[in-house]
Image (cartoon, rainbow, N blue to C red; front, top):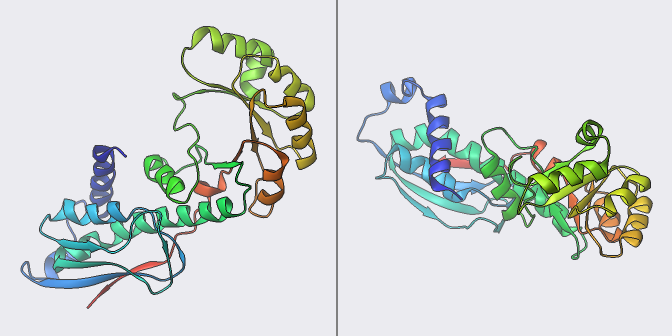
Length: 274
């Protein structure tokens, strides 16, 4: 990850949370008071963002001592000790919510991703999407990787993704791919299709990946047979946790799941002073 980008995210979050300081802590807690705290998991899951958690406090006060007991991507259990903290009470209180918000969100994404990966056929990879929290994409996508998933394109600049509106504007799949091939270089081209007819047309173009959008498992299996390993295939749309086992057995190479990042349930983690 880009450390400068992460620092900027944290700094902006801290400015949002205390634009003119912490009016409670600044007036109630002495500057020289020292405290110890424990970071504890309150549920089972996959940890992601533990280094970012640590960095929040370092950016407030680099004298704080934080001992991390787990690593990103590690499975943790309810009541497990994740880290210990020692430093100025003011620092720990000011950074607590921002640090936990990031850690809980990232760990929630990693935990959910791991559920999908665990029920998926080993020959198929679980992909994320661009349905991430604005300005937090770098964190959301790292969390997906920590959960065992695979990152799809990071942004609109990374690869050509031709969807229904692009096809309508260009007149056809064939013409859209032709234009993309002529006007770009060194980037992959993916085409979204919804029917067998569209799939056959895309198969005869120079695209690299074909997205089978909102197709039934039966229809995806048919596309896999027709494809015969010619292109990489991605299943997408209505890919629930319950459906992944059957969808991943159709023979597609990838399954993309927007729910990994757009419907995050934070992992329950708390910071306890002692």
